[in-house]
Image (spheres, helix red, strand yellow):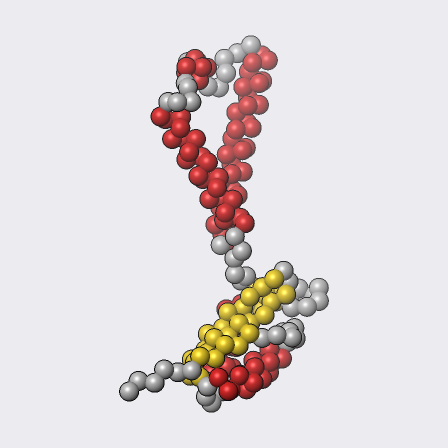
Length: 172
């Protein structure tokens, strides 16, 4: 989503820059006594336009909707691409790689068949959430396997790893 945010910011910056250049040019031309950069009938058209006119309301609604979409995209919490490691040395792990390795570690426990891992983040802190199919009694074994894999990755030690083991459905 980082790309969408950058494109939206770029479009907004270009629109603001174009508007600023247009206003500066109009001011400069007005100071020199020349015609403005807009067509000559433009001020009369703006003076005759009313709020109750349909095109005015459609454009206003469209601009408002676009602004709300950009605001929602900026405020939404997106899943991180990289997970920072403790310390200020700049090291990080790729989220998808961590999720795959932890899922593989959970599946290495004999009673676990399928495992899905999602990494959740709060600020700089992050923790894995595991949903697996297998024997609920193997929760401690799954947690041990995950902690061992996190140690291999040199990931920060977290007090809590969310493990949810769902018993496999039996087909008869």
